[in-house]
Image (cartoon, rainbow, N blue to C red; front, side, top):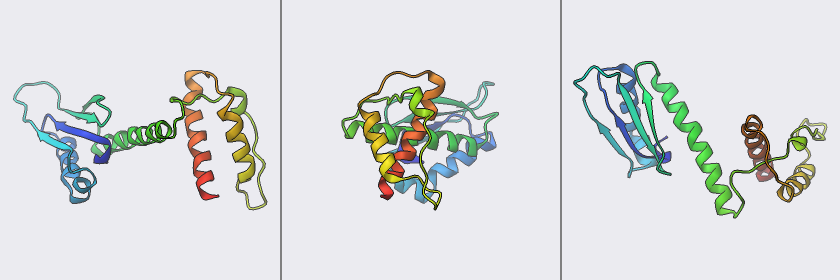
Length: 160
């Protein structure tokens, strides 16, 4: 989890979510994943709700209300954002434009399946090359699904 963050600041140690999250951040495996990540604990004396502030490696800062968010949800949110950051980095390193926009009509296409139920890798590769040269903007609602489909295709390509 910490490999996606540059700094963690849990602003209130009075709540269970803050304490559990700090414990997760200070665990040996988490610290080993990113030793450079700063984990700070500041005790609050005012009546403001407890909060956890995380700064991602790309500089984006997120303030999370720890009074109503369990530590597992905070962790899941960070891991989800981290997967997004890894995907973005992978595309940028490959020289591909980011964000990737997949045409809506291609999202509706059916893939041929082998008897084993897995997608045909040749069809996936052919579709990937076709998409690479015919990208245009789709609606915001479709973009999250588009990213999921593209990541799924990349995983299939890695298995080939």
